[in-house]
Image 1: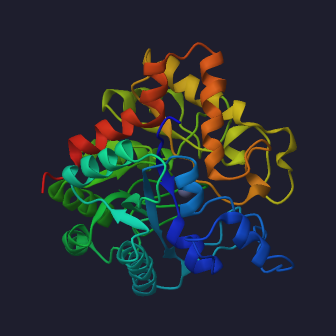
Image 2: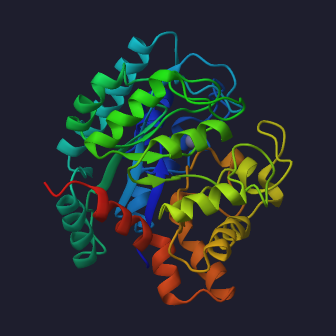
Length: 357
Ligand SMILES: [Zn+2]
């Protein structure tokens, strides 16, 4: 199996908001959740550390996800909304604590440096069939838990290595999915500090004006961890072709995402069924980025695996990311292209931008 680097997951959020143990297979968690009705995704989990090992995923970015109270998210409530930044901060620190405990348990390896990344990757190359820890680069989905620009350095010391400025609606620092507007004044100050410490800016979820504003003001490394293409699916959550071209100029990697509402036009959370959505749609978005770039050096996977009620119908756990290989191979993607998309592009970004020590 070809190793996969997944550019976006929310492992701590699922653990702490859904009370779901990431060290047991999703099938086991799903049986525990039979009959529970407090969230749409109960019994429909598709990601866990054992499933990642089964699907040969040595490394992912996994988020700290918390935000100041907004009601615009189009999925089941996941308890990532908090009334104040102080509370969002405390929750995100709790998610970080979860990753740290998983590391002490030998379940994950937190990756803070380029050396950590190389060691993790080599370890999996040497022992492909064992119970190795899953590598996690800690990212942040919405910067609201960072109380202000002065706190960037302490988050960096905590091991945070990439940051999305906002999520859905208006955040403390930028406008996000579903709304319009530029960065806030504090958003610009935050960007300057993020650049100073060497943090990767993840532009996923930025509203269009905030997107251009952020790229104008941020001289550092840029990615779009989980983002599909507006040419295929209308809507501000997707990147337009001009946005993708600008990201290509910045050498960004763009992760294609599996959530059905970002894969096909007209899909509505809580109403549509994933029946007619398949992994072939993910390949369409990967292909669109590759066609715009003229190569396979910018497209990757940022699966954002959530409940099976909004994942492709031929996808049952995260191990099924491997099914993308024959789909892309059939479309003419070479072995080298598949390596780029499955892991080499993300590896190049993080080997280049994580600190040496
Ligand atoms: Zn997201």
